[in-house]
Length: 113
Image (cartoon, rainbow, N blue to C red):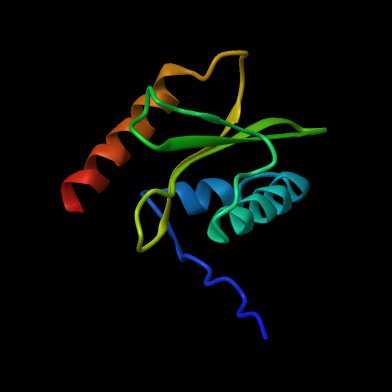
């Protein structure tokens, strides 16, 4: 009998969990589905590398009737999936404050690692 894959735990950095909880219900549910895929070692359905934030970081792209949302995470470490930042996009490009916050949390994670 095949063993189910071991789920990597998720560790939310800073206010990322509260930020995710503030998403509308459909976006929050989709974020949960996509993070579950990441925990199982799979890629999200819609993502892009976020090299500007740090090596190995990715952004999950979520679109729903309330707008566009992003979950920036890094899953390259053995012990957990680290969610660095969750936010609603307000323009075509990711805003600099969102990038800066994710970078700061990434650097703190690397330092503590």
